[in-house]
Length: 115
Image 1 (cartoon, one colour):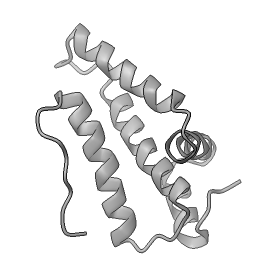
Image 2 (cartoon, rainbow, N blue to C red):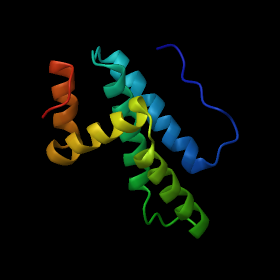
Image 3 (tube, rainbow, N blue to C red):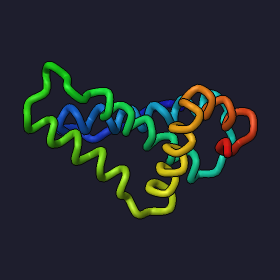
Image 4 (cartoon, one colour):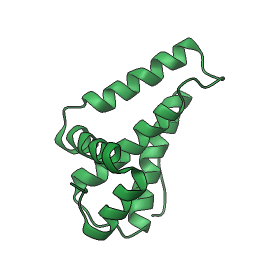
């Protein structure tokens, strides 16, 4: 990984969620994870979603920022694409059942999601 590029001028909440996604790509590459592109994008979307979720009720959030946060969380959940949408929902289900640490450990060892 030699660079992470993100567009300039995005609202802070969106920028941070995109940064979480891109940093997850870097983490997976640097950690020598081997998996399908669907699982990789799903994990990256999961981290973006978890960042947005962590901002709920932030004392620094305005009503407009809260609306933006919920909007982006819903877009991740409702994405119809095979790579990003289905990948996220598969990873989210695994995360809900096993927790983030166990999901990442399983993917690192086996290259797929725990059942």
